[in-house]
Length: 477
Image (cartoon, rainbow, N blue to C red; front, side, top):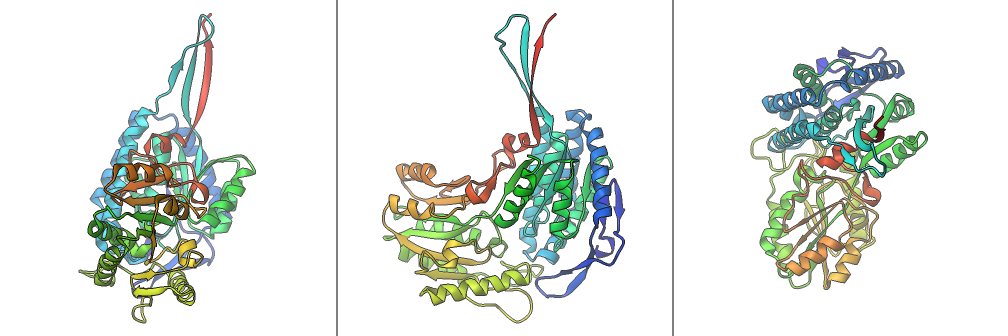
């Protein structure tokens, strides 16, 4: 596939001129897969022109026809699940089972958005004057510049494409350069599904250069980013210059609260599975564990035993339950987190070290007594680290859980409806799960508060963010 790496611009696959490239590396072996050519300003300008022309065409396509095309896109994703999963595992590292789940979950959202695009209804508001009416309508916002991360190279790209298409927008997607192949496959599937040239464009390049060029163009009317807090704030500042619409799904550091009356063994099992999925590189994963004093010993034992039992290996190998970290930067970050925690007096109950000397493997790691001001308790670890701390009261744990500027996901386990209600209302997060670890669904809006972002994806709310509201007052003559 690396021989076909190129930019999708105006329906054509364009290989940039020049020698600027970036190495794409298999994180399990550290072997170079190939070198991805990077777009320059000439290619970006061409993509902007193509997207502008594509929007003028696509916005006029009837919602029923747009839905047919987007549904076909989702169906083609399902037909190509093995091809996409193999590319994800080779470039990002997660196990093939997780990669397949990423593709099928992404296809489900695409299919839902296809149908929801037919239901972007407006409304009629009763007028204050005789012989008149007020219409409220949704109109597609225009050309979208979308930026997606490396941890979910299929689902993040496809959701940004599908939101734009369902709303009647065109889109320029800049996927992560470290994981390019899934997006290129998705671009080919868009063409096969019947997306007109210029409506979906895919470019790779220097992130700072691409974001500044696209966001600075008057052609782009909306920005969508899934990425880090720092990058999100930077793009928000760029967008603010021209007051452009923006959706930011940023990082998190999800508090997970386990009460004495919970099914402790089940809670531990679910938390381990969610925490170490994709080697912990999931923005919504439970990351800070607060366990009530009467249950902390039992929960910790179940959690540590399960963490130690995880088979870490090449995601392409049968039997692997957790793959490597996606890049060397994350491996070095894990070592820094562990060193800080140990220096501050935390006890390492499991893991705490790199595995082997080839590939970016790091052992599932569990801490006890990590101080509240330690890195692992205050910064998003984005890796297989899990600190566990005891607490006594609801008020105490809510204060600790809400102490950080993040507010993406939060979790609570309890057998009490009263306590569940207190957690649902008291946890400061955009998505909350009670007695489970599922926080996303195509039908429900997803996003955070505070440093975890602005706006929503999925649900009717997410699709509406790709539109402008227009109020029309009509007087009958």
